[in-house]
Length: 185
Image (cartoon, rainbow, N blue to C red):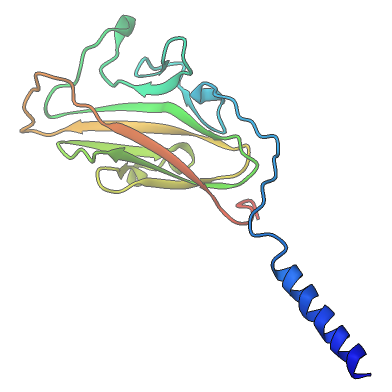
């Protein structure tokens, strides 16, 4: 009996060691893929307005990205804005959520640019008091799966703003994070 009990205990100890030490690394191969597309066809799509020259797709034969150039005007020529003025572009571009998830969207500038006030709003919050200055704070909103909203911009140059010999450049960044649950609920 002692021998059989000792044998059973030994086998259990060896089996538990084998279970713990079955492997320390593993590699499993699975197919994966993605396609580089123009920004207006992406999961987080940025679609330029068809009525404003200030927003357009740029990139030539490479995948095209949204470019915003508020200097663009008649015949797509560059003009600019003068000091102590305000210009507004309604529905300059659209943000579309082509993912299967509801997302929280943030639009902000990098680097923050404070010499000129840049206010933005999204279409379903168009109330005069809803313009949001995004110099320092992002514009934030939620989009359900398959939803889109138009983004409008308003530039106000200050009274003491000096003319620049070169173009002021910054990035307008649009980022989206999946949110739990459905915003339609």
